[in-house]
Length: 399
Image (cartoon, rainbow, N blue to C red; front, side, top):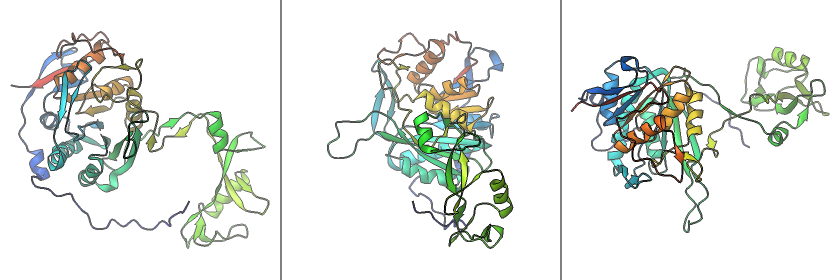
């Protein structure tokens, strides 16, 4: 694999997406919004979680001007994908429509992203989940709103099983999650997947005779010429042309004395990197284990486009700490809220679909049903039978 030589990062000239009707940021943040009022609350004024019914731009502006500015630790949103479709639940009841497209969709989402940025804590993160219709356009918008320097990852997720009905192109089985932060100092609890023995042996093929630990051999040099200590001779050797030592010569002496340098039969030094089986394998940016509902036994609310709960648990655990507020303003079936609750985080959910409110209510009161079952028609939007003791306020727009 070719390795680039690191140089000072060039930012180049900034660029922005342009279209008719693009509102300046100050105007977005000063838009008028209706009041919201609680209509049902399990734990009165002390409730820590909040479910809001109404237009999410109005709800976000209300939050911004009512004590939540820079208070949100993590945001995950799964907005409409500009598919020009209508989505129904398992009862064939319309859950939401997705008719916005082009510049209308871009501005719709951009305005909400601007407000979300103001709600986000300085060490907070945001994940935006889209498919190939708009993901690459919105990447440019995210760079503009959050700063390209705060871009962390562009995750490709396998969303479903292999499709066999494609004729003239490749099967569409992926969607994308953009991960940005508010600043360079952000919450990050690095996630790991557990090792299996076969993968461990393949990745760490050597065994240390002294400790019995598995290790792999990696070069002790890196691309780029250095004129300081890491560019000088060590044990009679210079780093390869165009490269430098990864460590100072004193540090290399320490590693060698500790038995952490492997010397080949030809005198070539490499560093021993030991396997840490308790940690596992760091999660990468291609996710194949978090498909959405795929079989009849899987539990679901029946809401269309419901996302994988384990995927949201991973995101919540990686980019927030216990007690943080997690916000999803396209709450849908409430998977993000459920993941936050399971991880001892507080949550705020917003949606303008009555079917969404029913699905979230059902999730937290009745639980979910097998994929093949229908969502109960008895779950009403504001009859919150909180059998699980969930602390939640339910609020709607003031009419």
